[in-house]
Every structure is written in structure tokens, then in C-alpha cells.
Amino acid sequence: MEFAEKLAALAAKVRQQRGAIETEEATKNAFVMPFISTILGYDVFNPLEVVPEFVADVGLKKGEKVDYAIVKDGVIQILIECKKSTEPVKIEHASQLFRYFSVTNARIAILTNGEVYQFFTDLDAPNRMDAKPFLVLDLNDIDESLIPELQKLSKDVFDLDSIISAAGELKYIGELKRTLAAQFKEPEDEWVKFLTGRVYSGAYTQKVREQFTALVAKASKQFLNDQVNERLKKALGAPSFPQNYDVEAAAAITSEPIVDADLANADGIVTTLEEIEGYQIVRAIVCSEVKPSRVAQRDAKSYFAVLLDDNNRKPIARLHFNRTQKYLGVFDDNKEETRVPINSLEEIYEHTEALRASVKSYL
Image 1 (cartoon, rainbow, N blue to C red):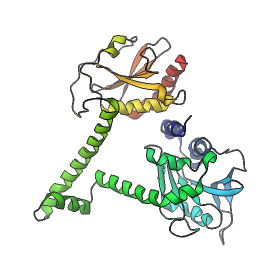
Image 2: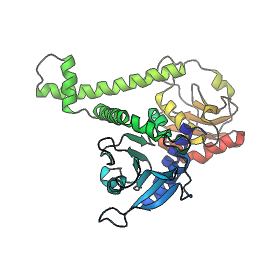
Image 3: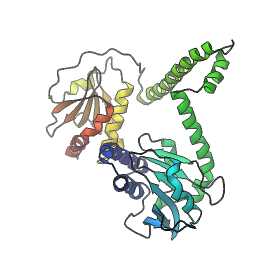
Image 4: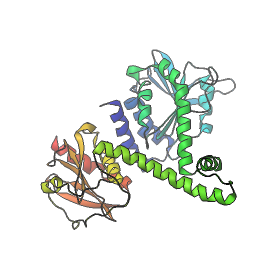
């Protein structure tokens, strides 16, 4: 399995199990240890590679522990501090990391709640951990541009010098991207004033500020949607992805066999962003059984099909999203479809076993 595929599989596991994780210890066992073993490639049961509850007394602080120390070539390279997944990751949780960073050879420190991983080094002062991470990995929203840098920390291709040299750029690019994302979501006054000055020549009064605050927020959302739509159009060869669209009424909610003709008739089909997102979720779930490249999508008038090997006789799922009530179609061993109502895309994860069982039946 490729590195990116392993990340996607772990992300699917996190989304599926997060509701059952309530303690820090459960977070370590369910999420963090699989990250260390599957993603970074270290043997969590080998104390020569992974040292749990690592102790290095610092000054008057005796007996304090860091959750994990990762050893490479006999030297401690990475320190990891964990918090339970129900808590947000905050720099205030990193007190042990700050102290241990200065008394070990580690150049990388990781603070995590099992879902978000913040990576730190010592860019600002030698042997002193920075207050801000140079890389942030969110398994709920993986930034694919960070995957090559993250892979440099894995056991097989460990390249500390390379990642340290790139850390400065990664740190500021990451901060800029998060700042832009925050401004797009809820623009601050300075951001609104800056953009208003580019398009409006009048006085920047209170009334103008209020008017353009709403306009900037609306324009930002439309701009992001335009960018996403353009990428999807290029990827799928579709002519457009309008936000408002008309579709024909769907069939009655019953179990039904595969109908090949439905997939063959592509006239008047409009693929939506929501269908693409649903396809990506199904793909992430079943990549535990097959390579993601084998999971294909094909849109029809009344549903969006997810197929194995792009073969309409190997259905994995159908997304019936062209209606007010959405349905996920899952298949049994006889390729009979059963539609189950869902209210959000996240509910697809509740049917992980059924989706994987469909794939296994074709292997």
C-alpha cells in the first residue's frame, strides 16, 4: 500500500471510531500507535525503536514522561506527546516536549490528539522547541502537499536534514494558508478594508464596512467554489457543476438488482460536488481491501455509482443524492441493492463493513 493510501486508511479509521474514544489511553491505542507503526513505519513493540513513557529528568522536574520517543540508529530522533481525541491540540499541552527537547538529541517533536498532528523543530533557537509547528497534519482534512514532507520522517526513508531544511518554508506557508482559510471563513476588519480599498473608491465608513464584510465573505465562498468546480471539470471532463440543479424524480425505495442500462445512459447527467465527496469517502473506506486506483466512479441520471475496476457488474455502492432525502445504496452477495437513508456524508462511515464486504465478494 502506498504512503498516501495508508494515510487515507488511517483517516477512515479515525472517522469511524472517534465516537468510541473517550480517554487519552484509548487515543494512543486506537490512533497514535497505528500512526507510529503504519505511517511512520516503526515497530511500537520494539523498545529499540519506540520507547513508551520515556523519562529524561530535567532540572527539578523529576519523573515526568513523554508518551513516546522514537529511536533511529540508536539516537532519539522524535518525541511524541498525546492528548485524548476529544480535546483540541493546544501548545499549552506541550510543556514536557519543551523541556525534553533541550536535553535529548531529538530535532522533531509531535503534539497530537490522534486526529491532528503538530510537528515542531528548533528553527527560532537551537535546541529549543519552537512555539509554532512547521507542519500540521489533520487526518480529517489531509493536505496532500504535505505528504512528501511527512514521508521523510518514516523509518525507511528517514531524512532529517531534508525536512529541517524545508521546515522554515513549510512553517510560514502553513501559517499563511491557515490565515487565509480563517479570513475566507470569517473575514476580519483589516482584511475587509484591504479588499474594499481595491474595488471601492469612496470613504470607508461604518455603513460601507458592514456592507463589504458580507460581500467579502460571499465573494470568498464563491471564489473557492469556482476553483473547486474548475478542478473537478478538468478531472471529470464534465461541462459544469452548478450549485442549483434540477433532476428527475428517483425510483421507489426498494431493493433492486443491477441495471446496466442505467449506467450506459449518460444524457443529461450532472455530477455534483457532494457526489464526488461521497465517492472519495467510499474510496477511502474500501482502500483497506484494494488499491484506490481500482475504485472507479460512474454517474447516471438517477444515481452515482462506485465500482470496482470500473466494471458495472462489480458495484460497491450507489449514491442517491438527487433528492431531498439522500440514500446510500449497499449491495449483498447477490448484488441486490438496499438503500439506507443518510442525513450527512459522515453517515457513510457507519456502513464501512457492508462496503468492504462488497469489495471482498469480488476478490
